[in-house]
Amino acid sequence: MQLSAAPYEERLTAPRSWWLVSFLVGLSLALILLPFGTLPMLVGLVGGTAAAAVAASSYGSVRIRVVGDSLVAGDARIPLTALGEAEVLDAEEARAWRTHKADTRAFLLLRSYIPTALRVEVTDPEDPTPYLYLSTREPERLAEAIRSAKAAAA
Image (cartoon, rainbow, N blue to C red; front, side, top):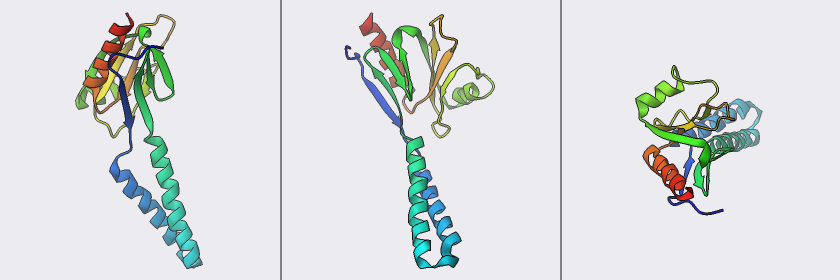
């Protein structure tokens, strides 16, 4: 497997406010367990915070990569030969493609806390997926990495 001309990797991490929410979940559990004593309250604080933090971290650990001759988005691995044009979506256009313009057959790697996205056409006639919608903080850079990797593979 050859390396792509413009390697790209992005981790879609959860926003900072989610870590505060994780602490508030632990605090809520601690208050619920307060009538049972100090030790259950502390266990609730630590356990609730840890469980909420693990949930936030696992949701926010998805990656988008251009590796060799493939685009890897979350669990999906798509060969670059099956991809067409990439369209950079600003916040308003990305919102439209998440809502009224969306196709139910599309592959969505959607993170609502990331306002921008990249829409990539799927040109494989065997694949019923019309396009990929990828939430990304750097859509221009991802589009360029896909174009460069496709050019290098050709």
